[in-house]
Figure 1 (cartoon, rainbow, N blue to C red):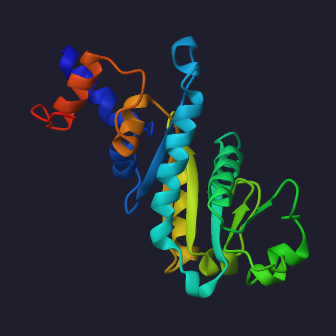
Figure 2 (figure 1 turned 90 degrees about the vertical axis):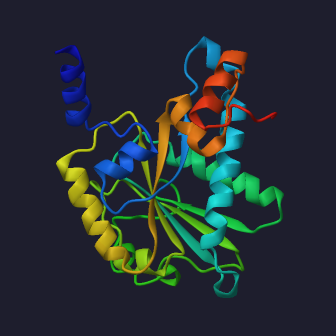
Length: 232
């Protein structure tokens, strides 16, 4: 009975949680990466390391989508709600690439673009809202789509569209509706998901074993990854 109860809860629970559960709950989706939470006294000291590893992983995952022959590459950062961490992700990604010599520009809904304006609503491409200055990459941080529409032209023109989702939130019917519309509007432009606020184990699917390290954690990680006889 107890086993059956927990199995039923697992089947009914719509919390995204990790890559595998998210891709099961959201058909035809791809999770590009994950960013672990670092709350609690034990994990606070690893906050910077978690952020650094997450940023490197996300940057490396984005690179295959870039097309240097058609600069600037446009990357739309989208969310369904406030408080998912888009601004921090973009800031750290911009700093990471800036240190490596890439020219990156961020256009944010709260400081650079009036997303309620006529020019934005009717925009067919980036040039309708911003005059490019030889950037390699332009990030556009959008308002949550429940509060502001995104012009189809910007979605189709982009090299990549990223929906940032909190892993500790449930996937609701209205979220499914928004995702379906976005998928349709993007046409041939890739639309991927990025999870924030995951637990450490979910993030390790992308980042590898994370600190704090211990013999037990290393053993469990190797067991899950079927690497019990490895020497690393």
